Length: 425
Image (cartoon, rainbow, N blue to C red; front, side, top):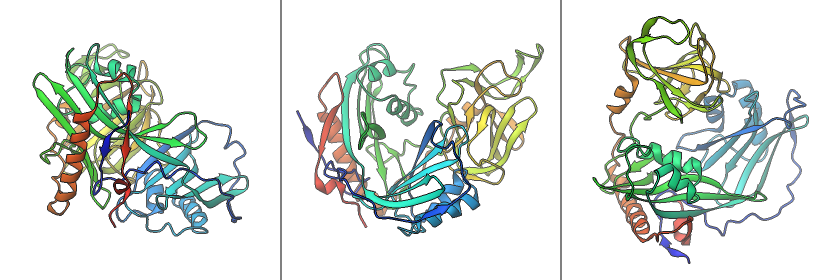
């Protein structure tokens, strides 16, 4: 049974299922020659999704994610043969596909409009760009459930994708620990995007649009809202921001294996010494993200910490990420990074007994407990008054839909109206 219509007009656009892919033979386009890489199709890949903000250019997006200026020029030059990508439209999506082993760029996909995609990909002998029909459509899925074993177990058992569960942990991370803070009998409700790619057997989960936890301390509701410039975040129904300037954690971890301490027995050196950070145990290769906007001031090998990234956040505050297995593609000193951007991957380099991230922060040159510092981080900015009417429409639609979700064992599809797909100019 279809659920009541979710009207999202004035907020973040959601593509209608009418925008299904159509077969089309691309017109012949030139190939921009680049240095050959005969193995580029034989290795695993990693996709990074970028949400465009006002003023973004394709070149800036590429260089911010580790593509060299020289290579970015080649990719943008190829794109220019079919579309002017110097100024991208805010609130559109860009997907970058990287070689998992070398972190070199393999392809770019950009939503020109609701029906057309710019695809730029590495081919034999160079780089080719073409326009194609949008090869996917996005639906909204919803689920209401009750905590019995634990949030992660109950949500994933009901069919919620793991990436959505992880995003919810970040959304509510400042209010409640989803692993330990919920009790049997508590309830959860959520809405999230699901994108179906043509030819793929299963959808790719996307952004959480709204969620609610009904706990013994009272309900906590999060509504995702994005302004016309592409800046988005999670808010309470009264407009108070839930999103903060800092991420709660820089990595999805299995456990905190060592906390901040002024005196700890070192597992390798076997002597007491300070442990001026927090260790997050996680599988090798797990993406590590910077906790706030900043500039990379160090990226490379550091004695003891192995492969390390240090980010300056301004205000005499820096963060450090150690024991990495590898840096993100092109990560180097001077790079400007955004909150949540992947800067490296979990490893065990340097003096380490197993895969984990050593995360540290210093203020005015003195190391402090990073979890205590991020916990004290200020909320993000409130909604600007000009955007308030659009937020109120989004809030009303999302909270109404959350309230109407029936209890079910699997996520159900929410129908959309055409007006919800119209993006304000």
